[in-house]
Image (cartoon, rainbow, N blue to C red; front, side):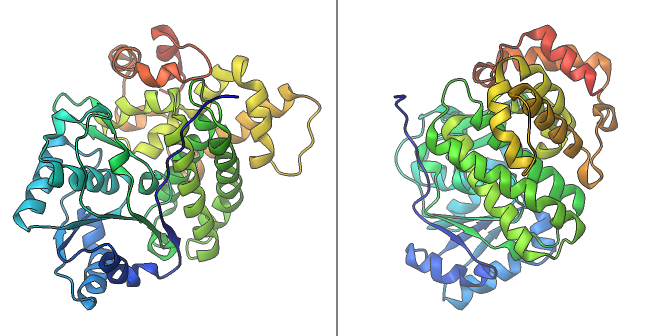
Length: 385
């Protein structure tokens, strides 16, 4: 029997229209001056105003920090912490995609602990508690609303992760209606991010466990089954809810089992070329899955029914190959570009990106089903250049 620890948020609410009950939930957590943390797009489209209205209806003094940037830079996170302090915030509401949710978690922690962000990179380096925290995703992909990890881009453009149980929110609030306006490209990229979470959790070499396995399989089935419907009709709220719940389940799976090389190779694309995280995962997903086949064939065969229900296979090898092919076909869904050159990556960039992967992001290679060296990473990047 393999020993493992599984952590999850104490409360998850999945309900269309739940954003209008935000004030009720914030009150239950003792918030009086909640700070909403979001990006300018969430403010511009009216979702932040709806959240503020819900909080103010409950008599709360809602405040807004709407300057979150993609791949959250450390300097921006510090500004958000300052805003929390200046407004005497006693609770944080993360609202948006992964960057907003990751930022909100760190703000809730640092606004209470007084630490600087440079002090908490790594595992369990956070001290003390955090402010009450509600996470409200508006995209279905990162799973950040149910994880205790935040990924921050430091001054050197290296992505660094904060792992601390304090980052788990008090409440993850899933309202599928908030994702109804996502364009197909964003919908596909974020959903593929979630599918990669599930796959890498299920095949983790170091932290695979039965609870994460069950969540990963269910997540893949929901995402693969309902994503085509969402891409065909963005207003299909039943399908949107299923995809959002799939992303949440995948988030709980990966944070308790780890992600691996797909994420490792995606990070330089985000930090250096500002490729959206889910899209970066989609770019390198196919060749990494093929690279891993020699070690992961039995596990990929077990995942095949999740994405190819009803298909019969003569062997594990056939099932695994079909699974990889199906995932490769999804990489271009929603009109996603499938080549790194679309984002300005050149052959000259590959060696330094590969060096970053095998030196600074080695923790993700360690969990990959197969060992991966510098030349392997270069070859995978060249395959999608």
